[in-house]
Length: 334
Image 1 (cartoon, one colour):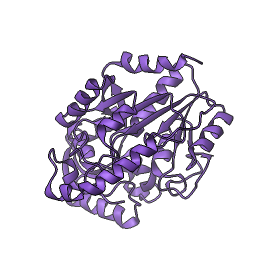
Image 2 (cartoon, rainbow, N blue to C red):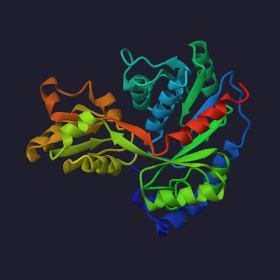
Image 3 (cartoon, rainbow, N blue to C red):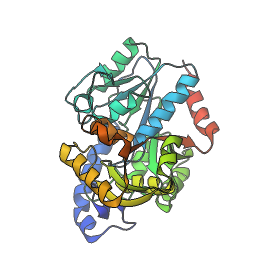
């Protein structure tokens, strides 16, 4: 998958963005009409964790955190995902001991290590399978723009550094539909990390009387210990690889080189060889994301395992009472 163009993330639209704006207008209106279509009522509550833009904003760590909080409340949460990049259409429960990323997609394989996960191109069928397997509630990872299911709680995740980008719709900018109209289709937003761009979206949400929650992505302590004051090669295939490099620097690592690929990159042995060669050149470790490791694991040489640091991240809410209050609303009418 190609990386998002740099002009998307400018505060003001560039000339190219303006030239593409008419296409963006059409795309945004089509998406908005789709969002407004009535959905099917599932026989259990559905929480949607989505975003306003194309590209990484932190949906998957947020869905993991929501599933964990629901389990602590006594629920039996299942995560429902489309399974992007996998050959299986579903509905099927992801088994990390049996499936590979080529079967179910990289994000579902990661998710299944944290919560029971179902993939389905047909979200209604996926929710039915989750209920049949014992789910009391479904966390829908992505799908804010997908109208197939009625959602009890709609959460939009916003990256603090990128926000809504240049404020235009695809392909002129990163938005999937106009921001104000998408905001009207959400119940709350979660801004991850600091940044003026994210604060502008938060201000728009407050103006629209939507709750705004703040959070940060915290790398695992064991990874931080290995990264501190070490030179690393940052290897990633995610929506915004610069975020991963920033995470490494915040953890105390010295980023000697970056090998950034497009989101959901299908790794090959040549990618692994290139990363290891760069590590030898810089006398560095290779650092990668937990999502990337789902595809790198079968390719990584056993004798080079000590040169690799996998960096899991978890979402930490600034005010846990805020998300707890939103989840408590799910008990109403049950």
